[in-house]
Image 1 (cartoon, rainbow, N blue to C red):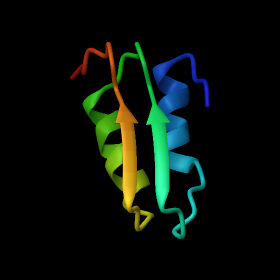
Image 2 (image 1 turned 60 degrees about the vertical axis):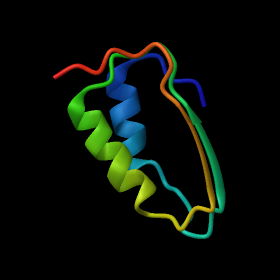
Image 3 (image 1 turned 30 degrees about the horizontal axis):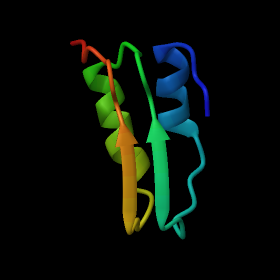
Image 4 (image 1 turned 60 degrees about the horizontal axis):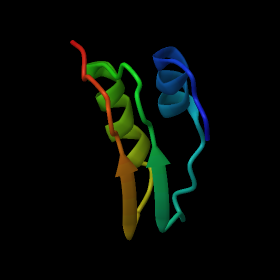
Length: 65
């Protein structure tokens, strides 16, 4: 998935469908302006699954208030 701005990232995390049967998930968000709200959306997004493996890459992000 390629997302170009934080609004689209928030929308994906809030409304993107994720299977509760998913076991391995790789999420790469490089060089975005992720907010504290985005991290909350990420938490609830991941809470919809029972993952065995999570590969999460937040490289080069400045977490903004």
